[in-house]
Length: 206
Image (cartoon, rainbow, N blue to C red):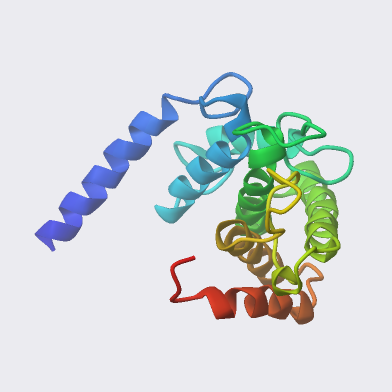
């Protein structure tokens, strides 16, 4: 019991510090290319301790953070603070947006049942667009048969680069699982395709 109290106290102190890092627009301070993923991860840190949007000491801060993430959606459904470049640029939106998208979608799936009113309506609309974007990225023609079912960056580093990797695919699958749990329309076949891409790579050096 004493160890649990130490852990809980440590988490509470960490969240209290994290709350001081929120900016006026609702985001948690970071470079633009790390948004909205960083803010979404911060929201999930509060959720993991039982805090909810609209309630308790961090309720309004969580609402503002959620609103910021919702505001980051591009017209095509992608969650990214910056518009991605046409060509790959290291650590810019063409590189990072796949992560931003999946992590933002995962967070919104987790909070969907805890928001209400206009925020809930907007969350549903943005989630539906985000799910469609994720599926379009998944079925985009791949150069290599073994990449089918997976995801990678919006733009690739070179014409010979793989179209899918484990890190992006894992985040996208967690997003789809969260959306499915929130009762959005996510056919099991989409997830099966992603898992089929991952299966041969698990346990390898990739």
